[in-house]
Amino acid sequence: MTFDGLPKQFLSSVRVLFDVLDTKQQGYIEFIDIEAKWNRENTDKLPSGWLIDMIMTAIIIINQMINE
Image (cartoon, rainbow, N blue to C red; front, side, top):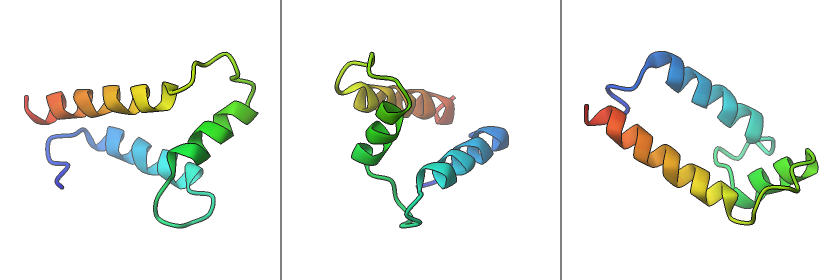
């Protein structure tokens, strides 16, 4: 996978977010861990499956940015 074409600031922000969320330092983040973290942060108003929808939207946006 290549990230050519993506803004360096965007990639830097994604790396920081990943480091924050990878609390177990496993090198990956499970969806359930992300949802659990946000649910602990008083976001019980979010519908179930919100994370998958957000990730799919991000993938579409990133693909568009790469293909421009």
